[in-house]
Length: 275
Image (cartoon, rainbow, N blue to C red; front, side, top):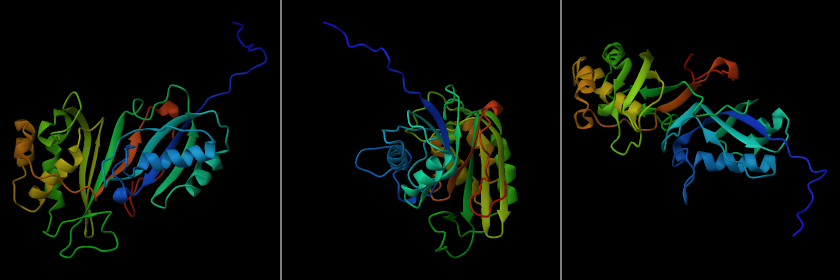
């Protein structure tokens, strides 16, 4: 059988694009696309596909759980569509719900991968430490009514710095091959009624930040001594640690990459928080 001639046909160029994404995760079943539930990934892919006039699949730096937010999520995708920068930002935003937005766009090299090129992730957990619960920000913070000593929490958290086995702060359903992670900083600061836990690591096991925060809350309100966090880490036993903190206060605020990718670095937030 005679094969059709390919003479004169040119391969369509492939463009590699990275985006910075912000979202309120309150009404989504997490980042990852799933059957019969709403997800951030599905919404973003639908908007990108409309602008690209072809199906688009995105890959993210970190798959956030149901109810978790992001100001610094990073994704990448490939496409045959040649578009101006404004199409990938304002154009895509026009097709997104109001609780998801593109913050920046950058053409990247073919070797860039949002997940595998990342060298660190940074999260912030925002606690509204007040006698009465909030109304306006109720889905963006976690309410904790017992008075918290942020300095005490910060001192206790220093036991988690460096490379350690985080089995005591790892969800039972975690699929990671190893519980070892390297935490480069853990800060706890108070801004009026808000207490913010800021933690950065090369990667995180499932529920690691929320499990750490849950235990730090026990220290902060005086239920446990400062040394308890170090004891939990050494025990490598999830059943000894505190309950998992709620999803509402957690934000993925930044992802680090090698400098040669030169990705934009907008303010992290959320809200009033300085960088």
